[in-house]
Image (spheres, rainbow, N blue to C red):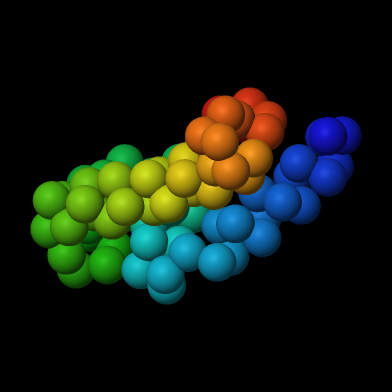
Length: 79
């Protein structure tokens, strides 16, 4: 896949995350906030932030690595 296509697919995948996961993922990966900073901004515990990031990353990995149906990665993404 071309870089532009890959970026578009990743954007769609991120947009498909549950709201809480999506918000925390973006704050971490796009805004470069620490888990502690995210927890403070959202008024939640750091553990909640950690759990939501774990869930978001698992969902993204599932889609990225599962697109061939055989478990082999269709492309490599650093999420």
